[in-house]
Image (cartoon, rainbow, N blue to C red; front, side):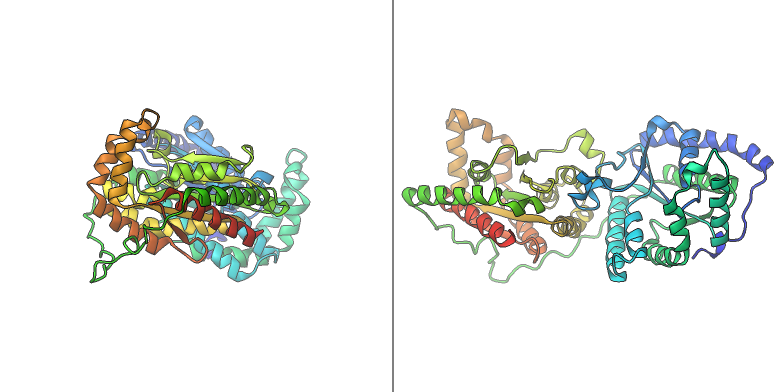
Length: 491
């Protein structure tokens, strides 16, 4: 994979002096056209130690308007970052539409380092690279232009570069014992890097290997490729291809589905409810102070039909928690800032640290429910969202997250009764909107979307708990019992 980057590529100074001014002008024009084009550009700069990665990044900032570039030098993860899924630190700094994000070090750095040092197995590297490939594919589906540059030096060239930097008093600080240790492991790093690049060099986001022996060749190559790919995307946007309707999820011939199979007649009298509520809230409180909770985060997802009692159920949980230990995230329509990012971005940002609880009152499932039914996204978008959501939840669980998902369900008749009650109760009127009434007219479409969602995202690591909420007392107790049981199992 690296052979073509070990041929001794060079650019003469006169060629550099002639081509750079025109290239800079063209890059600036493309950068300003990008603002109106409304798609983000993600540039990864990776490679061997001493290969001029930072210098290349600095050159791009010099050649273009740095106010429209977000540059991130990714060092070792902080304590805050280590307490969340590995990809959290990258999700929160993705560039919005119209801007360029440059990553000096990226989501490849630590999987490659861990494997090269023998702290992980080849199978774990392969798993990480498969996850990375899916992440990059998601970025591309969301409209991003992804460019990946690998700066390469042969073994002899790397040794020469490190010695040259070390012998110059002005650059000696840039060479560390870690760099020399990695040089001694050159063959191992090369093998691991080749495996990682081969697994993630896709048609939509191929790796571009650049020889770094001659800085002029290296930087001019990167600048020209960036201009070429950016200009091609600006001048020839992807044509709108009519989507072929996906095959619908097969329905049972008797009309039964998972929601219709719920027994909504389940009830609990008030006295039994009050006793159970106090007991369960006490157990939640004790578990929330368990010493082992500091090794986990807790993520609670509440979804359900309108007026099913999500807010009341959440309050019965938070009543038993220290207000400093949890945060409720009510999910409404995305803001302008959120619309400039992939749809999962606003949820990634709100994942909790270890020892904390995040409660989502509606969540990332809006993509396969409201956005699907109301036509706010294309069919291709919500169809691929199932696997992207499962990936997201897998990363939460793998990073020591305790994830519980509750679907609260009531009948159409009970929903109507609650809607009418809200309209005539002054302190409940804020809970009912014209949109709620409109949604009632789409009950069959929402029912189909809900059943698809439950079937395709109730996994072995993140199953859905279906809550019969026709009787609020029964529903709240079931939620608390489920939470207590899960926390006891985990802690």
